[in-house]
Image (cartoon, rainbow, N blue to C red; front, side, top):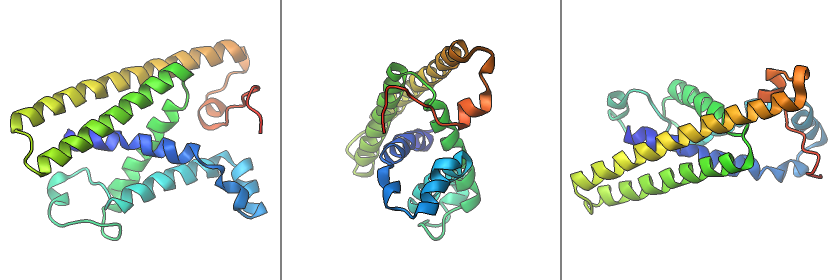
Length: 189
C-alpha cells in the first residue's frame, strides 16, 4: 500500500506539467493546429506524458515480487503495467479536472501532502531514522489522507456534474464533458 500511496501522489506532478503547457507556441503550425483541433490527440499526449514520466522512474509493476528481481531504469521497466497505470492515473487526473475550485484545491493539497509525507517517510526509512512503529503510524496517516483525497475527488466530480447538468440542461453530454475542453467566458487568451 505504501508504494501505491506514492504513486497516487504522482498525479500532482502531472497537473503541474499539464497546466504549465504554454509551450505549444514554439511548435510548428501543423502541430499547433492538431493540438488545438483534436481533443483525442491532446488526451493521447497526456497519457503518453504520464507514461514517459513513470518510465523515467524505471516503470511500475503490479507484481512487487517480479519487480524486486532486478533494478529497473527507463530502458528496462515493465511497459505493459506502466501503460495500464498511466491510463488509471490519467483517468483520475481527468476526473479531478472536472471540479469546482475549492474541491479541486483541497484535492490537490491533499495529494501534495501525501507526496511530501511519503517522500519524507521513505527518506527517514532508508536511513534508519524512524522505527517500524513510527513508519506504520505514518503509513496509517497517509491512508487517511488518501481516503480524504478520494472523498473530495468524488464529491468535487459529482458536484461539478450536477452544476454542468443544470447549466446545460438537456444539451449536457458526457463525452464533451469528460473529453472536451471547458470554455470559460471569463478567461481570455
